[in-house]
Image (cartoon, rainbow, N blue to C red; front, side, top):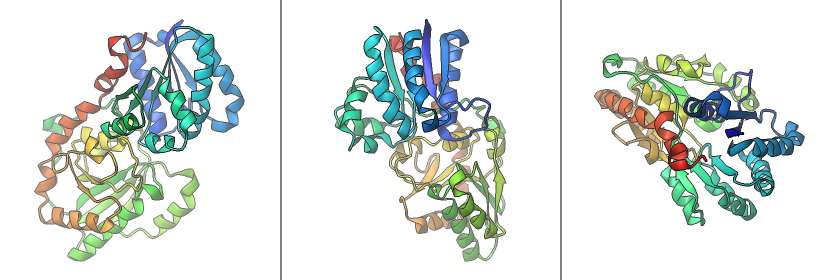
Length: 349
């Protein structure tokens, strides 16, 4: 009998760098570190709906052989796995089910899914990334919600390793999945507009990340029209993010997803001592200390992003003064600290 089984998108043998896969691996790895490899079973859900017929067998096998089950599904996976787990638990005594939420979409998702809401209320724990999400779910009647911030196992820079930038052009970057909804075009436009405003190259922009496979045509068109100040730099392995990011002046995070949770890209930036310039999504204040570790602007207001960049160009010390606070903030998002809420006090029996 194993201590815990983790059901999630591991994509074994494949190079997936999306937030769901990375978080699934981080949670499993930290549990292995705490309890030992032999006490943790990893169930890979890669293949999605194509492997639907396997799911009932996986769930019964998992509950039979593990005291605790942790799931980290996306939308479709939650609709399938949660009811099956709740039903299958009737056949196995003393099993605990835990749902680790990825991103910030769950409260809105449940509003029209009352049956799924009822099932999740029966789980032993739901672990959300932000206090904003916890409050929203409690308003929906949940009593089993805990805050477990998104986390990464990164080499956080020391103060002596911070890199400061004292002359133009100031190097900016985006470091998320490359898709329209992440605001990549908005970042390109903002940098270009500000450079034209000053009549010189004040900023450059490097775009990093895996291109969404459903948006390759959009991105190829964007790439062909990039101004000279912007370039696509490809994919960075997750264990090299700090090494790449530390050379940048600031990270731009102009997301168009209002229900982001705690974006891993911001944790990467903090560990590298790089402040964040971000749209104020729903849980912004859970992640960014405004004017301390970053600067926010009103969600969806790209003109405000232009104004922020113009102000920083006039007084770049605004950003330089934030770097030490960023590496201190990064320590809040390490697996050792974040997963305590899941493992302390006998939560995992």
